[in-house]
Amino acid sequence: MHTLNNVKERKAFAVLEDTILARSARVGVIGLGYVGLPLAAAVARAGFLTVGFDIDHAKVELINAGKSYIDAVASSDLAELKKTMRFSASANFAELSLSDVIIICVPTPLTRHREPDLSYVAATAGTISRYLRQGQIVVLESTSFPGTTIEIVKPILEQDGLKSGEDFFLGFSPEREDPGNIHYETTTIPKIVSGDGPEAKSLIESFYKAVVRTVVTVSSPSVAEAAKITENIFRAVNVALVNELKIIYEAMGIDVWEVIDAAATKPFGFMPFYPGPGLGGHCIPIDPFYLTWKAREFGVFTRFIELAGEINVSMPHYVIGKLEVALDHRFKRSIGSARILVLGIAYKKNVADIRESPSLRIIEILEKRGAKVDFHDPHIPMIPRTREHVELSGRSSVALNNRSIGSYDALIVSTDHDAIDYALVTKHARLLVDTRNVFARHGLNGSNIVKA
Ligand SMILES: NC(=O)c1ccc[n+]([C@@H]2O[C@H](COP(=O)([O-])OP(=O)(O)OC[C@H]3O[C@@H](n4cnc5c(N)ncnc54)[C@H](O)[C@@H]3O)[C@@H](O)[C@H]2O)c1
Image (cartoon, rainbow, N blue to C red):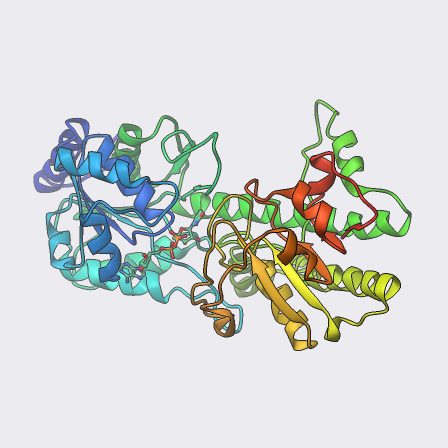
């Protein structure tokens, strides 16, 4: 049921549909980060001639040299793709005019005042608009509040006279990448798709069906945007809930992890979430506040989201409170005179991503109080530059051995990477503050372990 008016438009639609079905469509993926690189590789593997675009020339050069910088894509995968001649990277955005399908995977962070920063999305839409031609599909994948595709991206793309739904086809399809997940990858995670109008929806659906196993089509880009943000809010709120329960049960002398494992034996109506030192990563601590900001426009309050944020942000202080009491009780030592080793600084286990990691916040608070702090992380030999913790950049992971472990007053397990030797740590540490229940999970116990 197509609504295209004239022959030229119908032809553009039919040609695009044919090239997608024949896998002869050319695809451009903009933003080659944690989301864009695995996606571009999957698109190329599905048979499309794919070019990844990034403003970061170093990334472009690495990819063209067959070297990956993202765990989810092995360098050997890039080398394989290179042989097929179907995948390359470019910083020359004029080549976008050759792409039939353009996918936007650029960052959507918060500003310093914790408001949505859509500058990357707007800049990218501006770049695309310069090369936009009839018969192209543009899909936004970056997470944002409902309305972004239609209210922000569409007007920029239309600024030179081309019309969405007639000249080009616009849609939103949220990325659901889960770094470190060994059960799901780009092509096996069901993909929500949407379009601005029935033709866009149909074309975008056809395209993603050619790349991923399951496509879920929804009625509008706003629904797709809202679905993504709902998934992340669901997680943020539930993590906050178990973090609060941790504090309540701790006061009652009850182990929250044992409680959650017991509750999780219920075969329906319960889903386990686990407490920790706070929320990290590029999505969960950030995306909910995109909705909070947008809701204000409608005079609606987002109390659940704000409360969850408040609880999750307070967790590093809770962990440090537990450390403080333990140091005092056991060694009559203050935080300001202590040497602390933080174990794991990635935002979650078995990945090398430190964005928004609560470990960095813990280090920062401890150092402000005068503690001498080091870190060990098997995945992060050196702390890269981050916007919020510039002072920590360049610091190196210390080796983990009998002597180093024993030289600290306390170790805080902030991220429970599998590659850490927890038996060794238990044996030699004077005090262990465990935010992940990792020692119990490894069957290790000792009077030096304090759960936090
Ligand atoms: N990382 C995840 O696990 C994850 C999961 C789901 C959704 N998302 C969402 O996906 C989007 C991208 O996140 P990411 O983690 O891949 O970010 P990232 O920082 O890893 O990668 C973004 C890339 O975009 C490039 N870039 C920035 N501005 C650009 C521009 N104007 N033109 C071209 N390239 C540009 C950067 O150089 C970088 O390589 C965000 O909206 C994020 O919320 C991320």
